[in-house]
Image 1 (cartoon, rainbow, N blue to C red):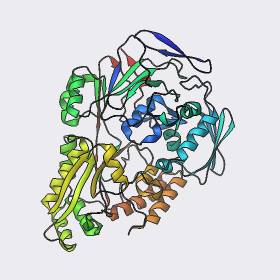
Image 2 (image 1 turned 180 degrees about the horizontal axis):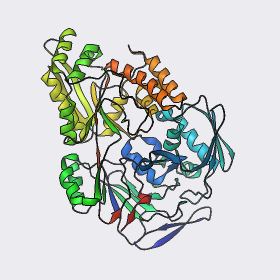
Image 3 (image 1 turned 180 degrees about the vertical axis):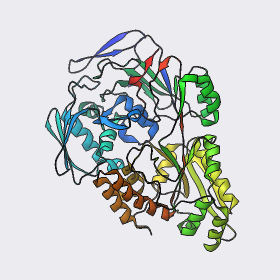
Image 4 (image 1 turned 135 degrees about the vertical axis):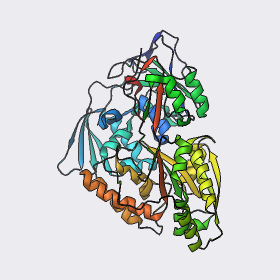
Amino acid sequence: MIRKPFGVGVAMTVLLGTGTAFAWTQGSDKPVKFRLVASLSSLDWEQTTNLRDMKVWHQMYEGLYGMDEAKNGYYPELAKKVDLSKNGLVYTITLQNGVKFQNGDPLKASDVVFSYRRAMKNPRFNYLTSMITDVAAVNDGTVKVTLNKPYSPIAHTFFCVKVLSEKEVTGQGPKFGTIPNKAGTGPYCASNYTIATGLKLEAWSGYWRGAPAIKNVEYVVIPDDTSAVIAYQNGELDYLEDTPLSAWKDVSKAAGDHGKLIKGNNIMFMAVNYLSPGHKALANQKVREAIFYAVNKHDINLAVCDGYGMEATQYMPSEYVPASPSTGFKTYAFDPAKAKKLLAEAGFPKGVDVGAIMTYGTSTSNNAKMAQVLQANLADVGINATVSVAEAAIVTPKLYNQDYDICVFSDSGNYDYNNIRQQVHSESKGMYVIKYQGGPFDWKKLETLCDQGAAISDTDKRRAIYTQLWSLVMDSATILPCLHRPVGVVWSKRLDIGQPVPTYYKIRTFSLK
């Protein structure tokens, strides 16, 4: 059952079953409106790793660590103090004092244990939890996390795993994620949620950092970029992230001091499935290399970013990820003559059909634009491909199951290079789009390098290890980084958002002028 918003200007007190008074405050200001490019998948953070969903969850739920992009990285959030044992295997975490869930119950170590054990049972999050052997409550305010090996990127796990109220999750049972809940410790809670139209959030006056200034938030589903721009220009959106770059010149001019173009922490890449069920030619190394040499990244940049983007060879930008390799691996400069030569050597002098370039979004989305450029690039060297675009909910399961030929995929928000294990390690089934395990590549070496890079903290040594790893990936001609997109953020003149960030904005830090 969806709880309707309270009347404007009314402070309501909800009496919980425990007798605790829980106050939700409705300010007199109209809702601050944000865009969703597609329906939110769920209110349960464990149901998807789609970034559009994650950005919303960060307003509702918190982890042991938080993320502050403006100040370069992770910081203790629900964790007040973290002590590491001498052998690097045991983290003893003291929780913040006075934190309550949105249902009024105090945060306890048992809720942290419940949340982590729940995540550890979900195969989607193996890449975050596989190093954890045990999570235990020392007392109500202290948690002990035991690892099976030293693991330097543990901050990312502490950030990604959100702490939920055990009582709230178990109380809602199978409905959790489909209806509003009060399971988080964050500054906002869903007051209304429907898959078709979007989400409304209310500020919680009992938030442990203090009640946020913005009282009412509404996420509106607007799939089409042009419609989103018009909505912002008409004052129907207060915050528009990832503004279409084709419109950036005009939109930023209108926004004035209320707009900024930020270097994005993202990657748009092409993957070629050597296990393609319908096009065996993709198993041929020279065919895959021919595809790579046929790609004109300059064309992709113009089509997707109006030339504002940065052509990519890295998976993660070094500016955001210090251990990211920048040299020492094979790259594929645009060379159509070489592509044709490789096709002939592979036995396809007259060209070859490679099936469909599959991606998700709308027909005008960035992914679709890139797929269309790739189709034209490949046709120029005699490689025939169609383009298939559908909703993410339809496409991503196919990609994760290797049920495709070629795909355009995006990733974003990586702040530690260990996240590359999502794409290369067999434990990340349900995350990777290329299955290296069991293939003709040195996949065991890939997994060993993942483990070695995570076991040490020295940035230079980690970069050296990850350079070996990325070199193996690039030699396989299966994943081709194409473009890092900038992020254009504009906001209404009634908002003060502080320093804009490319990914994890925090509405609790915004205020009305």
